[in-house]
Structure formats: structure tokens, C-alpha cells
Length: 358
Image (tube, rainbow, N blue to C red; front, side, top):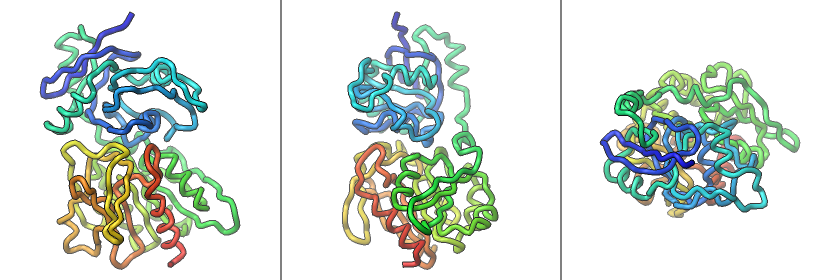
């Protein structure tokens, strides 16, 4: 028997649907506009504890498979979708989406008008919400809504131990990747370029990184507000000028803060695989995959040795920057293309060039 449920936003707006599995959740409600890649999004650590809404109405039509996992588990706090397809069809198919959600213990509210949810969030801004059964008591709903948003989510998603990923060929460049919630396809993209990787936990000290004498340092994507992890920023500061550094998403924001710039929260964020980005160095516009709720404040770069290299065509926000003197650069979006286009794989080549001293 189907159980009716509802999404209640903190401004009192209610959206009705049906519940699958675990029936209660609380977190920040965000939306993603991608038409595919739902498993990649569910397992992207950058969505840790958030209630993820998909605007595309048909979800689950190609099932799930181990191949598409971006981390060791699904970290989302809840899943809000339109039609939940019961039977997937794809040559990679292993399990249905419903089976995956139940195995991962992800609360799911389906049969929801997710485009209405998206329009509301776009107009009012990202806000907290709860998923509850239709007959939940007022006391239960008030208690769930009072649960504070967790701020130390990087600690939750990072690797617990350092591990190595080998590379083929002789004398491959050695990259230390600091894992703040790294997606597996970023690591795969680097190894495909011939890099040998040492992946280290988020709380690794700068001295431990430099003791390995890597050719380059990578600062990964991850969840949360960069202003909540000043201890990590302090360690990043100690790495500046020591080795070439490349940052993506949260790594980009942490790098900016380490260099003296500021970050701020966007009204509803950039989450989807159709975000146009302009490379100011070439004038070329590419389509990118993005998942972030914070950005670097452009006017805070004014008196710093940093220059903006990429901007978002839709709203003009900073999408990339580079140091004018040191081998350091970063981008706000995801060049590894999962889910989404592969227009931006050239950024990994730029990192390789920096490590070679070119």
C-alpha cells in the first residue's frame, strides 16, 4: 500500500507526493536540472545531507549500476522526484532505482511536481525542508524542522585513510589529492591522463602532503560552506607556492579563501549539466556540469594576485581563477563530465603542463 507524504519548506509551503522507504528527512532543499545522471548525483558527496530535487520528471528509467557510483555510498539526506520508473532499461542495468534507494536508506518522496518546487526555490531561495508522512503530527514536524543544518559535512564524506591509485607508464606525475568529498570520476580522469595519485583525508596537515614531495596538489570538490572549515584553509595556506595546485568546486573556494578572497552563498546555487561557462582567455564558451551553493566574490579579488579566468554566462559569477605569479589555478565547475558534457577536460591537461613546468 502506497504511503502518502509531503515536503514542507520552512516558509510553510507544502508539496504532496508518495513515500518510498524511510519516511522522514530534514535538510536544505536544492534542485538539479540534469536530464540524466541521477545515480551520480545521489552519490556525489557534495550533496551530503541535502534534500535533492530533480526537475526532470522521469527518473529511474535506466536503473542503477556500480559503474556510476561516485563515492562509497549515497550521502544525500533525501530525494524528491516526479515519476519513479519501476523498470529500468540499459545494458549496464543492475538494480532498479527503488531498490538502490532502499538499500542506501535514502528517504524518497515521488509523484511530486518538482518543477513547481524548483520555481519556488528559484524565487524564494534555498531553504530548509522536511519530508514526512501525510499524517505526521505537528509536534513531529516542528521537531524535525528545528534540527539544525549540519556544518561539518566534509568530515563525514572524506576518506578515513590515505590510499594510492597507480598509473601506467614510466615516471608518471605524482599528485596528492586532498579528499573533501571527491567524485570518483575526477580521480579516474586524472589517472586517464597518466597521473599517479595519493588520496589523503581532509584533515591532513600540509607537512604530511609536502613530505611526499608530489609533483602537484589537487584540492577536491565537497559539501558545505567553505567558511565552516577554516582549519582546512589554514593548511592550504601552507601549501601555497610549494607545488602546483589545482582546485575544483569546494577546492576552488578553499583556495580563494587561503589567498585572501571571500566567498558567499548563492540564492539557489548552480546544479545541473547545462551551465554555460566562458573562458575569458579565449572567448570560448563551453557547457559544464555544476553542483555548488557558494561562489567566490569577484570584488574580493581586486587587490590580490589573482585573476578571473572563467565566468558563468547566465549570471556572471566567478567560475575560474588563476594566480598571476604562482602555478595555481582552479574552477568552480566539474570538468570530469559526470554527469554532463566533456568540453572541459582540457583543464586536466593544463594541470599536467603546470606540473611539467611548461
